[in-house]
Image 1 (cartoon, rainbow, N blue to C red):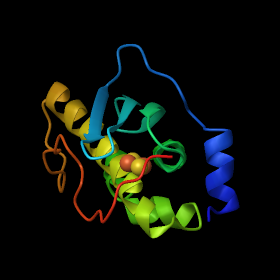
Image 2: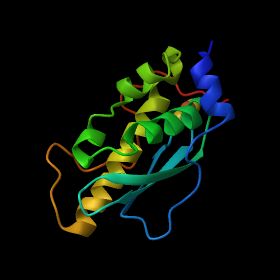
Image 3: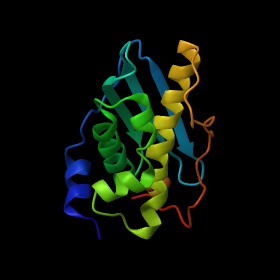
Image 4: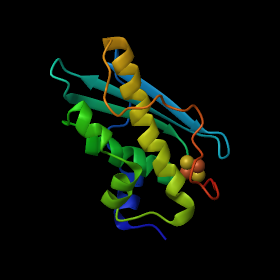
Length: 146
Ligand code: FES
C-alpha cells in the first residue's frame, strides 16, 4: 500500500523538532481526522530557508509528507518553497494511496502558513501566497487515521 520512500520517511522522519525564535511558524489541521501539523522556518536575510523543523500529530502519511516537505524546502528561496505543492511532495515519495492524498495537503498548507507568518513578521508580501486556511479538507474524499 505504501511505497518504500513513504515507509522510510515515516520510520526515520527528517527534521523533527522545533526552532526557537523561528522566522515563521505555521500550524494547520484537518478537523475530520483531527491530525495537526506544525512547521517552523528559519529564513536568512536573503530569503533562503536555512533550517526547517516540523511536529506532526497525525497519521503515518502525515508524518511522511511533512518529513519530505521539509527536505524539499530546505535551502530553497521563499519563492521556490511556494512551488513545493502537495503533488510535488507525493511525487517525491513515489505516490500515496488515494485516501491519503489529503495528508499531503496538510504538508503544503503548513509550509504556506509558516511562510505567511514569516511575511507578516517581516512586513513583506510573498507573491502568489494566499492566506492559509485553518482547517484543511479540500480535495479529500475520506480521512482515515492509522
Ligand atoms: Fe488525516 Fe492523514 S492527515 S489521516
